[in-house]
Amino acid sequence: MKLKIIISGGGTGGHIFPAIAIANAIKEKFVDADILFVGAEGKMEMEKVPAAGYEIIGLPIMGLQRSLTLQNLKFPFKLLASMLKANKIIKDFKPDVVVGVGGYASGPLLKAATKRGIPALIQEQNSYPGITNKLLASKVQKICVAYQGMERFFPKDKIIITGNPVRQDIKNIAEKRTRGLEHFGLEATKKIVLVIGGSLGARTINESIEANLETFAQNNVQLLWQTGSWYAEKAAKVVEKFTSNGIKTMPFITKMDYAYAVADVVISRAGASSISELCLVGKPSVFVPSPNVAEDHQTKNAMALVNQNAAILVKDIEAKEKLVQETLLLIKDEAKQALLKENITKMAFKDSAQIIADEVVKLGIKN
Image (cartoon, rainbow, N blue to C red; front, side, top):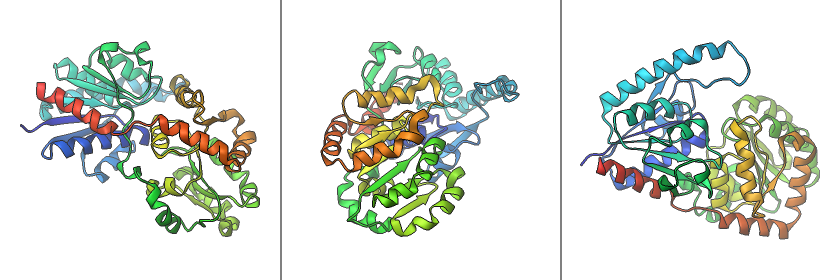
């Protein structure tokens, strides 16, 4: 039989890359599976999904702003338009199963599908679920999670602990170190810090790094700094005088396998996808959870590791004062790096995408 599957959600790389990993795993099992993505108009999935070789349709959905703003007046109209479009997509495509990965678009699409009795699965990446997935939990058949204790939020009998799917190319990175050093133009004899603020960048991390470029140079530490597109121009200017010190900046790192391969220590936001990748590659990490996320879920994600002595946490509000200081202490402490590496590696889930793909296929075949 030819399986027809819709995967819905997005908004950030943390939702999109796992969604693509699930789609690729399904394709490995069923080459002729017909997979359609549904995202939010204007969001990065509209670019990243076609680049990965899949068709995507956008909904006009938007999120509610937390502050009082005129934008919020548009919300009910956009929601209604999205529900109508989602119903039409379901009617036209006739999926056997739908998958929600979080993000604005997954709500209307999964609501439209489950109303018609189409089996559904949600993949919750965080240790504290978003409102969309909490609302959908009673309607879906399976809920794939990455953390223990999720029965606080979801029906226990629906939960499967799978971990978060990650990009396939970050497996076996040890053998890529030499190529990575060449690719980024870095020296093998000096320590390297990788800075990743998430796919959209992170203001506090960027400002903390910018203020301390001299400190990295003085300590003979090289820097691979992903800024996000909005900070890229400013970062490119400020690093000009440090290029001979191995301080490199770029808006977005496409060769993340090379970046992980060369990094001795990683500074990162604590999005679920980033954490899952860092567990898999086993890198000593300093997390700066974003304060601008629902229910402060990034702090909860990071604390799951900190409590196992598997990572270091620096609060966003303290980052300008403490982030670089903590990072340099860690880069000089080989024993601490080894301990964090050992403990973070224990928390890795392997083959998450394949396990989730199996569940999706089972639901689709039953249907």
